[in-house]
Length: 299
Image 1 (cartoon, rainbow, N blue to C red):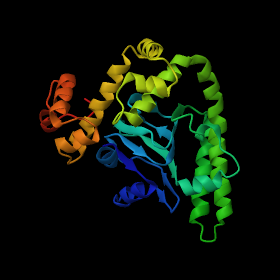
Image 2 (image 1 turned 180 degrees about the vertical axis):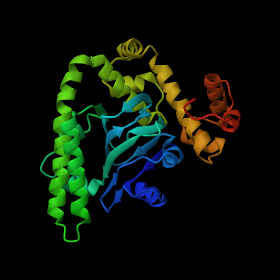
Image 3 (image 1 turned 90 degrees about the horizontal axis):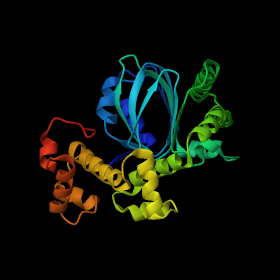
Image 4 (image 1 turned 135 degrees about the vertical axis):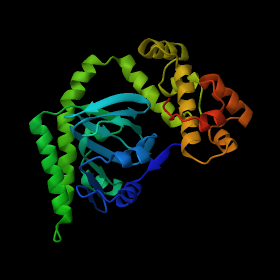
């Protein structure tokens, strides 16, 4: 099963590492100003779903990530928004990669946005990657510094923190909107439907594995839905569904102590024999062979 990280989980992980002099941990937010290769490989080389939003500015270097099973390369100057529940994994990165990131608790988020919700956070965008200009990047970094200094200040006012967090979120939204508008012209409706399909299978494939189910969720006929997926991706909807099932099985084999029976139960296979047959048909390996082999879940 894919691991889900809360803000508390992130805090616990960061507190275990000694080289976090540039990072800031408080009750309602975590600010990270560097990446730690060891930490990334140990905790983030497998897909993880966070139940909080995350904002990143890549200050230098590059990273290869997977977002809802789609590979993305991010590099210096890129800004990344990851919504709650989105499946992400860091697969590779340069030695000089550096970022400035903030993760905010739901409680602080709700209080800061009590007067209205920025469009980027309203749920219709699972994630976004865009490149602000140098002035916009500095403004983001300055807001992060102000949030940290205000929270750390012994006599800080909670209302000031809320206003600063609100300003940060609305500012990110204002920078993102022109990119969304330009992308809307370049990305067809069919590509948007495919992206929605990918988000749905990541969320529901443990239980639902028929093309008809996902076509219904997208309010499309199965025939039309199948045509769109094939045209956009070059693969059939069933191929994507099966690929996601295989990926989730691989993650459990490599990153958990679950027995085959427990994996079969969690993925709603009738028994382990059917799971093994399915897995071998798609990987040419039995689950036990894959578990013993020196390969990652992504291979």
